[in-house]
Image (tube, rainbow, N blue to C red):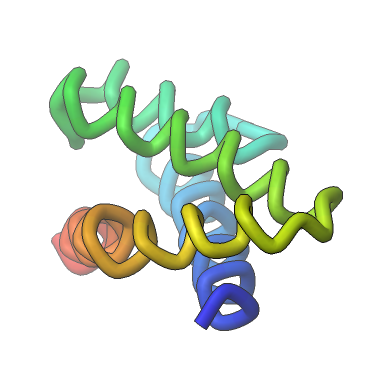
Length: 95
């Protein structure tokens, strides 16, 4: 599940990057920058943006860490929080 999260996260933020460029003329080059721009353009709430920024930190952490406890924590967050956040991003992209 963690590997699928990594791929889905990459696809989500890179899709947001394209949306921002095409709709607002904004060039964003990193996930956090993309999510901040979504908030700045009122496409997501402040609370959702903060959660997406934390999800970005978790994504970066798991890529560089091979810790079983961290993996288990991330697995739980994916199931309980991050899946829904990625669905929210998908909803923004569909609009």
